[in-house]
Amino acid sequence: MKTPKILVVGSLVMDLIYSTSRVPNEGETVNNGLSFVSAPGGKGANQAVQSARLGVNVTMVGKIGNDVFGEELLKTIHEAGINIDNILRDESCSSAVSSIILEVVPGKKTKNRILVVPGANMELTVNDIEFLKDKISEYDLVILQLEIPLEVNKKVVEYAYDQGIPVMLNSAPYEHLDDDILAKLTYISPNEHEAYSLTGIKLTKDDGGIDIKKVEIAAKILLNKGVKNVIITLGSNGVAFMNKNIFVVKPCVDIVTVVDPTAAGDSFTGAFCSAVCMGMPPEKALDFANYTATLTVSKMGAITSLPTMNEVRDLMKKDNYNYKFI
Image 1 (cartoon, rainbow, N blue to C red):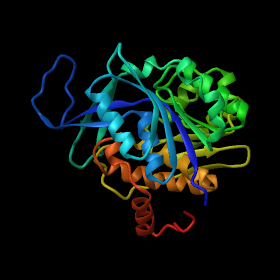
Image 2: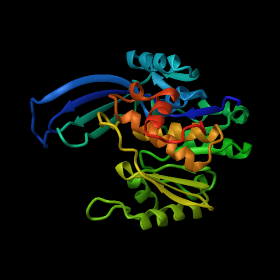
Image 3: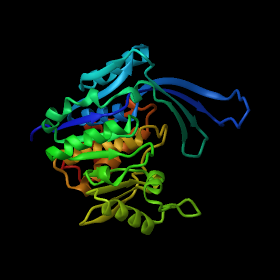
Image 4: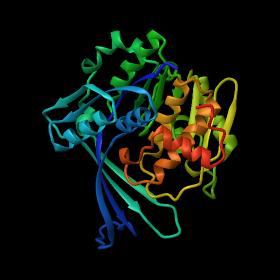
């Protein structure tokens, strides 16, 4: 089988990760931090590395600052086998950083709170990616997120659409998307909160569960706006998928101890895109992505937690899943 080629245009962020048994209240200082670690991440870099670790040929376009964090980010994605020829440097600002607070309570699932300082990510310009107009046809799929300027994403979508190249937009963090960009997307993958912002349909019940009928309504709204395939990730409630032929909800693969949920959604996105580029039908690709994301939450950090193809295969085999389609 030919090795798929994926283009990722997106963010690179150095994650500063703090673990605590209790998050401070407003104006409060607590002396109960458990640990600290820094780790390369960013939605674009996470999705690029996840795809590369699953055997895909990945090129990334983005921007970093001329600083030590930028050097570490560049080194990390290069070591993952990603083409970094079009990772640009900006002298006017720092590389992006995020502060991730993990609330670790025995007997409960770890919760995270994330604050991002976007830095050089938001300095990527339309002129910086203009070369893709003539290059984008070389790829099997393009992955985008919303941690870079929207006008850059719009231009990449336009280039890909004109060449018939499928685009996955991981619509996080939320930003208003007009119907013109939605109509040109092959895939969109909001979580339940982003889906609510995009459609006005609240997917959660009063008890915190998910109303599947509302999920179906929200997905239909996005389909009616022109998106070909809608994926709504639902956290521990699984993931929903809809296109003109099917609507399916897949449960979460809950077979590991959650250590750090950071990058689970990015792992899912990278794995799903890799799977469809390898020829898997959507329902199988969803399963594959679920197992991949499950492995991710069992380790600390973003890029440091992303699994390889062999690790995903081993987990699927251990769970008695028919993994031979890979």
